Image (cartoon, rainbow, N blue to C red; front, side, top):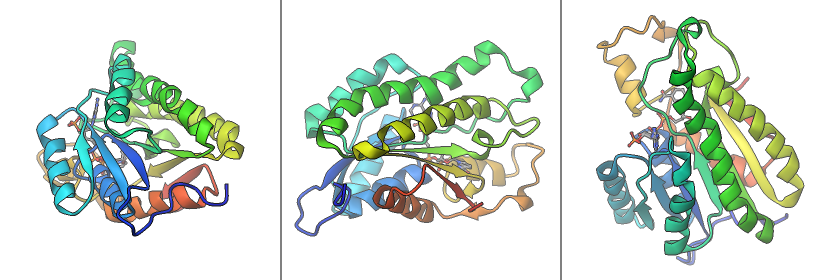
Length: 251
Ligand SMILES: NC(=O)c1ccc[n+]([C@@H]2O[C@H](COP(=O)([O-])OP(=O)(O)OC[C@H]3O[C@@H](n4cnc5c(N)ncnc54)[C@H](OP(=O)(O)O)[C@@H]3O)[C@@H](O)[C@H]2O)c1
C-alpha cells in the first residue's frame, strides 16, 4: 500500500470515516479533532448521549462532519447494530479507534472475582473482537484500513494492587498482536498505544488530581500528557504503519 486512504486532502471531500469508540473529554475528542482536521468524518461512540452530542456539535462548528452514536461497549451484542447505524449513515468505516475507559478504580488482584472481571473482558476483548469482525470484510476488500487501540500501562506491565482492567487489556494486546501480523501485508494496520501517563482533560485526570479519592498512587511519579500529542501520535501511526506497539512515554 503506497498511498493509504488515511492521507487527507484539502478539497472539502471526506477522505474517510473514523469511529472513535470511547469518546470522552481526554483522548477521544482529541482523536476526533485530529482526524477530523485531516478530512475524516467522525462517529463518536460512548454511553452518555448528551456528552457525545455536545462533542459532535462542537466539532461541526469547527468544520468537521461528526455525529453521535450512543452505545454501551460492554454489551458486545450491540456491535452489529452500532456498525450498521454508522455505515447506514456514512458508508464504510476506514479507521476504528478504541480506547474506552471509566473512572472506576483499580482492583487488587487478590480481590478480583470472575463476576467483576466479566464486564471488563467484554469491554476490552470481546467487543473489539466483534468490531473487527464487523469492519474487516470491508477493509480487506479495499486493501486498506486501520484499527488503533489505546491501553493503560497495566496492559503491558502487571502492577501489584492495580488489577482489573490490566488482565482484560493484556488479553486484548495479545489478540491485537496476532491480528497485526495477519493483516499487515493486506494493507490493514493494527496498532496499540499504551499510555503510562495521566491524560490532561480526561475524567480520570480530574478525579485523580482532585484529591477527593484516595488511590495510594504517588501521582508525582506519573507524567501528564496532552491528549492532542497522543492524537498526533495515533495519526502518525496510521500513516507510518511501522510497528504494532507504541508507548507513551516512549520506552
Ligand atoms: N485518563 C488517563 O489519565 C489515562 C491514563 C493512562 C491510560 N489511559 C488510556 O488512555 C485511553 C484514553 O483515556 P481517556 O481517559 O483520555 O479517555 P476519554 O476519551 O477521555 O474517555 C473515554 C470515554 O470512554 C467512554 N466509555 C467508558 N466505558 C464505556 C462503555 N462501556 N461503552 C461506551 N463508552 C464507554 C466514557 O464515556 P461514557 O461514560 O459516556 O460511556 C469515557 O468518556 C484509554 O485507553 C485509557 O486506558 C488514560
